[in-house]
Length: 262
Image (cartoon, rainbow, N blue to C red; front, side, top):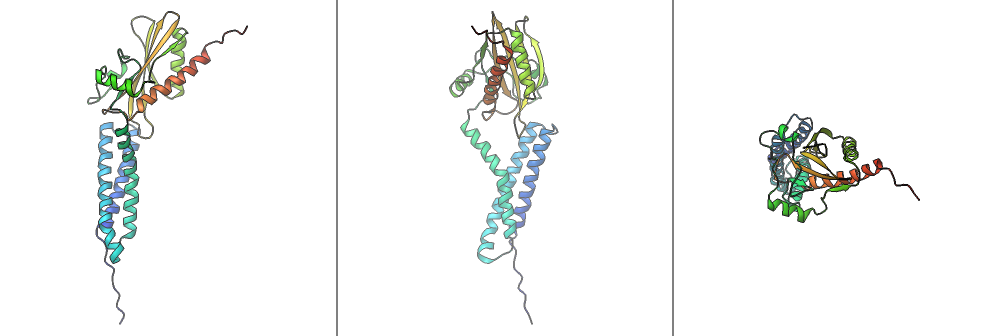
């Protein structure tokens, strides 16, 4: 008579796999829904936190099953591998976000003018309840930005304000930004143009305003970018302002006629 021995299964291995699959599905659905504006940013954050918690639990369940599979030959090896791999797929981006949070300054509002930052008009009307207030940065925030982002400064162009305004609008359109405005401030010598910008991958929203002030034969440009939620922007807004102004430099140069050669 032939005796068939049944290999025992590590009970935690399949549960780890199931949790890891669920965590990855939650992240993918949350990112897609956030991009499509079906999920608000606070709910998106909590969805990601929930998925991270499930991924940690999935890896722990796989770790509990690993000794039994390795030393005693219990069934569940493939489930452990899936729990580790899928859990890591969720935890790796979250870990990178934590790294950015620890290595970037605690700022969510960046401006080229720290004393009198450009004011938002349109953004104040469309920001949801619970979003960050659009107030001027306090002294600590101004000092922190000056120390961390000294390169974030305004621009002076020796051209009329209408030329600069055209360059700003063209640069925004080339980036695919929806233009709000322009709003005339006081007289026709001051313009504000606003837009909403979404970060790559996660579509985290920032409100952006570009201020143009005509000063004699030149125009001075300031820019401000403010995260809609959270107390830090992971360095996104400073990079956004710096890169936009570099593109604006090039755009103004194309609209400015070259001086005649002698």
